[in-house]
Each structure stands twice: as structure tokens, then as C-alpha cells.
Length: 441
Image 1 (tube, rainbow, N blue to C red):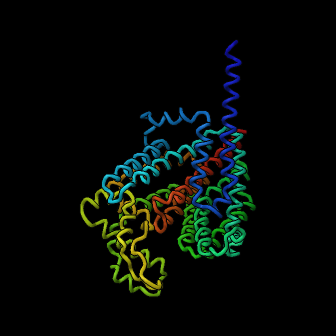
Image 2: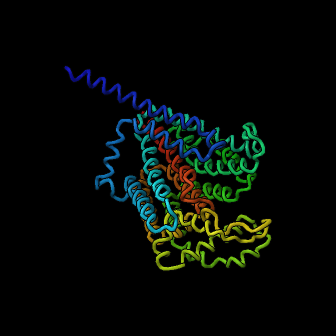
Image 3: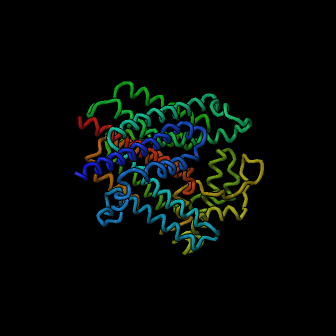
């Protein structure tokens, strides 16, 4: 008889821990529109706070973390295997501190490892919450995400009316950049939010209602306006890729999977070869009439390729963590059409994740990333029959859109960009928790 009160007390403590964790996560959810519009860089800090003050308190976290050390968890086709591969890659990144020409880069290398660990815990939270709490958070997620996308559209059409309300004045250039980056986050969240809307609005096995298509059109219009009016071509291309991949995956999910994964893998393998066909920097300096940002990227990529092939060790292992910053510190400049004077030839990153992995971590790093892609494909293939077409469409639309962002704008060290697809996966998990609840009724 003495065990019953103890069990009751223990159960109440676990219940309160669960409610606390969910409440902390809901704080981030409610702040999502503000973060995307006003403070895109802080979405990573928000995720860290959710894990520190919410997830770490949640019952079941430490047993789940302990299962990562079991050999069965490393079998291909499991989410644990993907997380383990990401951790292995981050450890190689940390090891490259030994040969980078920069000093005191251990903290930056460690940030990637911590990011993957925090992301895994963040996603686990939504998966492990009780069904009724997860369903409630899902509805808050849908409302917050929809408000964020509408606000991005308002910002684009009005030229930044929301940000203009907030002092100080006279920062139009920075405001436009911030809103454009917020649009990038919104694009990553779009497939997940549409999946969540579909799950909340419809019954299992039914097609979306007419209202779904109307809301989807408004969301696409808002993000399209943000991409067009803020002048970020890559966001327009990413939006087109999201629509194309998502549509194909609805009808031919396996074909869409192979095309998307093949595009990722082929770009990693062929990036340095393709870069060798770029014109020389001297020729690029004479390219008058082309968009200045794209001409600048050609010069950046050409210079990066010259460094990738500078020697066998550079090709095999790269220049080490944050080697891009070292190239920036060399101070080389280039004169490009459209700029009033010489500009740095190489900024703090090459604006291309595929090139950056080759440049900083060499062939070894690329092979590790290809292994991660293979694990993701195995994960999808083992679940493709179980995954309903809307889920596959959302996942592959996200992968296609993020591919475009990686190819033109992303750096491994801009964690807020890496966090955007993590948040999208968080929303997708919430959507499937809602669907599972409806199926069980």
C-alpha cells in the first residue's frame, strides 16, 4: 500500500514536467512571427532556450538519449543513425581545428556539434509529448506560422511598415536585408505549415477542402512578394523548387525522392569540377550588364576553386574550420561592374554550402556528407510506403527549396539558416501527431 502514494506523487511530478516543457516550447511558438520579422538570427537562441528550459525537464529524454549508444540505433534507415552521422561529421569539423590557419576556432567548430544535439532534442520533444498536448501546440504553431507569413507579405508590399514602427529610424538597408532573410525562413516553413493545415482541416483519407487551396495561394503570394519586392532571386527560385518538388512528390514520391537526393549528391560530387569551367577572375571583372550579386558569386566561387585544387592535402582535407574567414583576411579585392570601387574578392563565406564543404573539409568531409544523404534516403525509402503522400511531398519540397538556398546563399556557420529546416521538421512532426490522433478515433 505504501507504493501507491509514491507512484501517484511520481506521476504528478512527471505530468507537471511535461506541462512545463510544453509551455516553454509554446513561448517560442508564440514568438515565431516576431522572430521571423524582427530578429531572424535569434531563432537559434530561441531553440536553445526551449531545449534548456523545456526539453531537459521533460520525462523520458535521458532514456531516449541513452538509446543512441545502442548498436541497434545505428542501423541505416533510422533517425538515430542520421543523428549519429551528423555528430560524426561535427567531430571531424572539430578535428579540423588542428590544421586551420586561424587560431581559436574550437568554439566555432563546437557550435556545430551542439547545434545538432540541440536540434535532435528539439525534434524529440514534439515526438514525445502526450497526444493531446502535441495537438494543442500544433494549432498554436499553425496560427503563429500563418501570421508570420502574412506579416512577411505586408512587409514586402508596404516596404517595411511593421519594422518602421520600431526605432531607431534610418536603417532601411538593414531592414530590407532582415526581411529578406525572414522570407528565407518562411519558405522553409511553408511546406510544413501547409501539411499541418491539411491535417488539422481535413479528415483522414480525404482531399483538401477548397479553403486549403485558397490559404495556400495566399501564403505563396506573400512569400513570392517578399522574394520579388526585396530583390532576392534565390528566394524566388527556392519557392519554384518547393512547388515543383511538392507537386511531383504528391503523385510520384519515389521519383521525387531520387531526383531530389540525386541533385544533392551530384552537386556535392561535381561542384569542384563545375567550378573549373568558370571564367577566370579577370574575365569576370569585365562582365558588364549581368546582375552584380551573381557576378560577385562567380568571382567568389572561382577563387574558392583555385584554393580547393591548390594541393593534394587541400583537396583531401580542406583548409580546416572557417578557412573561408582566413581567405577573407588576406584582403584581396576585385573590381566588378556595378560597384563604385574595389570590393573584397572573398567574403566571410563562399555563399555556397557545397563549395564551402570542399574548401574547408575537403574530399573527406564531402564523403561524410554523402553518407548522411544516403542515410536520409534509406530513412525515406523504408518509410515511403507508410508515409502518406502529403508527408512525402512536404519533406521533399523542403529538401528542394533548401537545396537552392544552400547552392547560392548558405554558410555552415550561419546557424539561423540551418535552424529553418529543423523548425520545419518540428512542424511536420506536430502535423503527424494531429493525424495520428484523428486516425485513432
